[in-house]
Image (cartoon, rainbow, N blue to C red; front, side, top):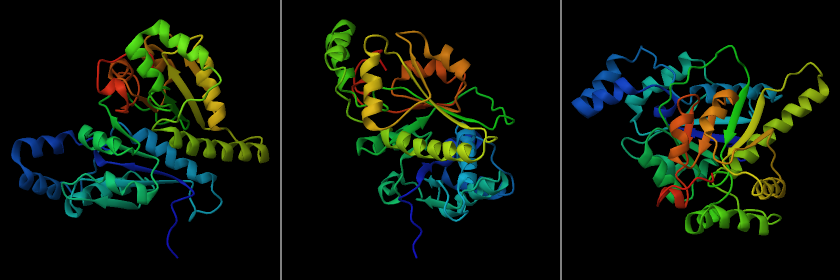
Length: 316
């Protein structure tokens, strides 16, 4: 009987997001493909070190212990790689070395693998390759570019904290377009007039919905075992502030999704708040916000909407 991916959270991740490939990429850029292939073969027994998205993936996979059946995990992570199968072997050996429960992979020698996302029911594709991410997003596939970060993981911390921007990430960019065209005052007036009208979902709406299902499983576990400590926490961190906060909250409720925390910052630097919140991954559609957040947390650019085709605004 075929293995069914439909009823679980499926994440696609490129080796460039999961591992530190700086040395490998340098060989490829400076010496070419054949030298790159030799380099990977010569270092086949040398595990790759964790990359920016590694702490997020490691903790996400650890939540599979909530499933009563090991053969029916809540989370499935699949490697999507531009490597060919031979050079990708080092990636899979590194996965095994780090004891990550990843057993499935797609290697597409030099070709972007995002086109396999729909058939694999993926709610998210993470890569450090901006071209692959933009191409996926242009086809309405949820993807994000993992940015370089100075973040150092606390391996003794078992919790998983996920943070999202709102506009252009969880919601579409309709209100962002008002901001771009007419400015902040008109934006607030528009959001107040539409306070009870939910936004249309954005690119990572389904991802949050799937995360909520895991949170519900945790709540059921805590109900049956008072000693169980909840590990997964979700926040939104947005430059919205009153009065435009009401529509954001109404939209979450209408979509049937929830968050644990909401930060309505009204232009305060997101990096300062993210530095205290310490998420293991933060998603935002605006590069200007990610400059500061990537210094303190693994940060992901979601290249969606008007701010990624014209002058950036600041309502995210």
